Length: 417
Image (cartoon, rainbow, N blue to C red; front, side, top):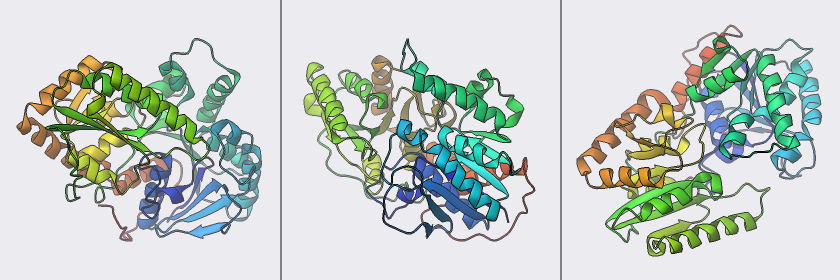
């Protein structure tokens, strides 16, 4: 058994469980909850440290997934933006230092750069191995937004990410693309292990009841947060070249630190774009789509379109493949690993409505290809992307840092194959 300390100062894994059906169905909270459950189910002791965001509730929570959540008092007990959270990481790190002097874990695993900062502050005098997963990198985010000037916050993040990567005992990247980016930052490839994100293959399955509200011959589905980086505008522009097809946008709930106004602004922009392109009658935007609704929506689509500016994990593509649906995805980030081009879906250049439209026309005109891609996608998920497989790969990375004693013990976890 390994004593594992997961550190996630910016997200709460409790939002990643099915009981929180209104929580976004994608994101770091899902990754953290599912990975922690899988590791606990394999017989390891897992404690997740997250920042307290409210005044109520116990300091320590035992979860149905078999792991413990510790709500760390750092900063005000309210939702904070990433920039606001950064100012609380010193206090967060001090708590971890005190906690781990009394209850030292065998290994720590920090998620996102802010958590890595707090973790390395705490472990520098304790000799505890640290594993770091960034999930997204400041250099990539700056580049894909095509900004010419870099503000102080972005500069600080990029500088600290380099220091955190060099200070970690082991790096876990979520994609091959991220390994390349880490190498550009000066990190030797030999210190990095690729472990992708996973998907709940029982929840996202072909057995779910499909949504039956289709109004056109064909349906495409896009999903994600209602923000420009999700690339919904690319899908809307592509729709003008795809006849007799509707586009459903499943917009996920916004993070609590964002106002509803930002969602409304993006929705208004998309509605205006649909009107300009002459497809306003074929675009439907559904707000606050949670975990329970997603399988039915995925199964209702002939194909799923994932065209974000950049997606480090490719979670939507995984969910679609798990439901047996072909994917049209931008050839970047995690989707380069997840989607096998011309086997489980079609990869297209980033920000290219014409390429998306051509890929959609090909799939929508050929039911046999759609079915073949769907079967191959489901098979690929079961072979490579279940959370139990992700946990096994994570343990192999831990073994590079500490001895891991394998156990035959495995607790059955609801909703995971």
